[in-house]
Length: 262
Image 1 (tube, one colour):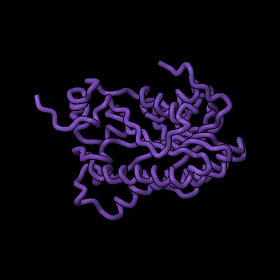
Image 2 (cartoon, helix red, strand yellow; image 1 turned 120 degrees about the horizontal axis):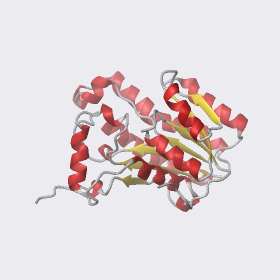
Image 3 (cartoon, rainbow, N blue to C red; image 1 turned 180 degrees about the vertical axis):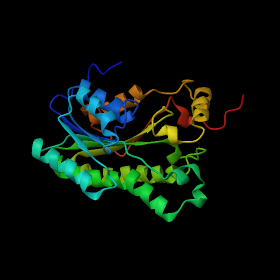
């Protein structure tokens, strides 16, 4: 089901983190475009470009540029292009997360300082950088949204180093919301449930989490990417004009459940 009522015509948006057609960032991009927004999409590197370029064409992306947030200059270059072409920005969607394989699959106890720092830089600090670069382009206010997961709040088996990294990201959301609110820039996170994406495929025993969600979530199912995409659209729209510093769960209610005995 595509959006049929939210109007983003004339709005300019940046989406960072589309990897392929299964990405939550792609689901959000389709919703933004269906609502009439003009989009800037990025791809990680030359290896990823063939997967993302056809998607950029589908949403008529006005800007399509490489962006590896681990390279200091590339995110800045994207914003320079936006400033030159549009002169303003209305919303950003941040869907970037990464950890070394040995840290993602190993115990947090054994995580190296270098691996932890790198995961924080890519998954968390990149959102801070995005906010800093977006601020001068959001002269009339705007919206910054990132993606989180329940592992930020509670222990989720096999999520390992990404748990504290996402917890830091959620704290960043609150502090950025506090600092940028005076400029009418809203900052929020979507805590998505168990959706099968490329990123999720890196989590060991992910199928067990899907099965547990179906068993325990109030809606007795998982969510799909389009449900997350529609929540992203809502957060970027004027319908969410009074919402900032929020962690919105789109997980069929799974996050409310504790120990359930039958």
